[in-house]
Length: 467
Image (tube, rainbow, N blue to C red; front, side):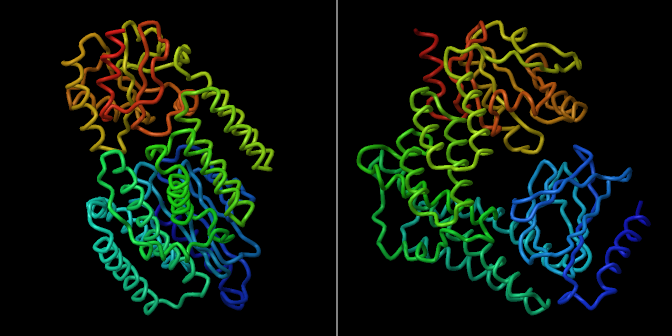
């Protein structure tokens, strides 16, 4: 295996280096190995426009030739999306273990250093999130100072890399955007955190100078429109603009009808790139439908989306999602999906539900959540013995799941996996392990969208018992 990997790499490198070098080569290669693959193929796209399916060989390797490489972001997909920077002359090999995707991802070959840098920068930004969370309680001036310090650290990291590697202007634009939009996103989250304090009368006065960074936000960048730091920042930005539109009338709630109604109008009015506009509108509606509880409001949002978004493919996706969401409204029967129990037996979910039941989800990929959610469930079982609490693991590793259930002494009779997560996850719109559902003893939905850690879940349990 080791021999074949490096022979493969050398063949790819020679294929482009035999020409006149990276400046004039024009083509590029992407290849690699998937450890613990979940399918027999990967998908590669440029800016998520056209995409190609590339099949793995018997050793789980793949390779893909870009005949005319346009310098910029390409996307590798194998259940998770990964952005890569590719330009003419690159011959990039990646290796990733699907069980630890971000942490295991490495690149080798010409062009690898740039992508290892971007991966390291992404992980650096993500690992700092917990510390930055504590900054949201600071006054605006101190928060800006903290973020200036974070920016300086990231910029120094990039400057050192730039000194050690000969990189293109196109790469520097992407690297700088990764730093800038991560910072801008944190600034928007500070504003959102402050908006949430409105209900407690604890909002801090934010000076207008705080928002100077917004002048630098590009509302129509073609090359970045599918890049996660940029796209996520725009989502936060429009959430805050939507709240400004209804400030004084409503509390800050990203899931509310009024919020999303105004957010869609703002995206339509301000975004200058049509493809980016359609993506933001679609993402807004998806998030709303996943959490919607009012059929009339859903119909209004759907009409607005169909008026604003001109993509027939997007309209089809949203129409299908709308139908699924309608089937998950309160008083609808829970879809009778197949589960796998601790003994590896398949049974229908309605066979398991015999009393009022809380259904929660968890994943082996989030060990802290696994610990916290089971601790919370233990507390609720004692306080609300009238309810059953069923945990559904969303992974596809039966033996590993069973070992953990046994090792932690979880109550195996209440622990399950989906027989087919892709099918079941879509049927229940499980977009997060934090999703929780409540059903009655007949499997009729009481509440399709709650959270086991929310402040009001106990009130919901009491309301049902006292009705």
